[in-house]
Image 1 (cartoon, rainbow, N blue to C red):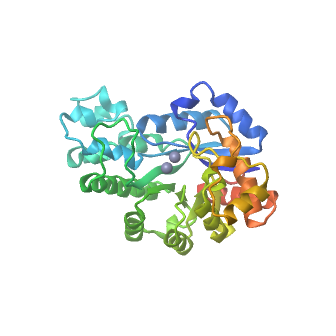
Image 2 (image 1 turned 30 degrees about the vertical axis):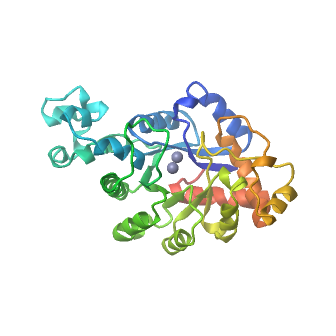
Image 3 (image 1 turned 120 degrees about the horizontal axis):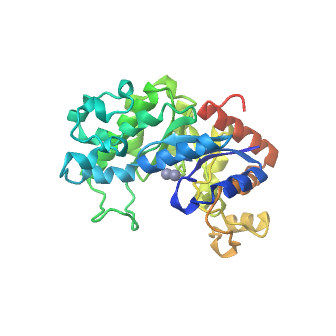
Length: 332
Ligand SMILES: [Zn+2]
Ligand SMILES: [Zn+2]
């Protein structure tokens, strides 16, 4: 049995394919998946998918990338009101809120940044929601983005931090796990985590798509944070070295599908010699059919097993049990 701790079956590329993709995953032994939200729309969709399938769970959250729109000038209040409440713009706050007891309406006047997290408290009541995520800090300058004039500046990073902090609070308040996205922002992420750390977060937090970094690994070990490894380990040499240093008790697998397609090699010997020669593996890759899917957890599992010198069964068992601990899924 295998567990994909991070996939985006809620993304448009999988529209009308979910049934098929879930079937293919199960045929490859991937019986558990967490579908991860990145904004309001994809979080709703994650819950919708999770509620339909056994073994599928949802994480809900606002990705740091989407803090960008919160950074842009506020023209009208309406723009920041979550979809579920939009119909009630202008009406008394209580009418705008479908589950009044869950939401602290006084926040409406306090900080427009926080309005974007309101939907979380609506969705969090679903039994299939196991985590808040993906949330964190991302300083990468994306070339492809829906935001015009996108640029990573101090103001944007401040907005990301605020959003991250708020969502950690919600995870703690509702006793949910936390999926952390970090890209080129190690210091900021570790600073925030150090500030807000609560023992409750031990074994309930994951550095998803973890950068191969000693400091992150040490922090993870000290705070009992899981490390998510995905398909780029099949061609990213530094990550291969990194994986060998992760104690198995902290390792979980993820595809981050539709992204990060693993690459296949003719044989593992080929990979090993390429590693020794400090070459990339791109040239030897066999193309897999896009998009990346949860079924490819099997390839990642088997690749890691050979890399660290354990059996495929052992890695599957350990990482699945770790993932169940991470998301509090027992029995199952
Ligand atoms: Zn991510
Ligand atoms: Zn993701």
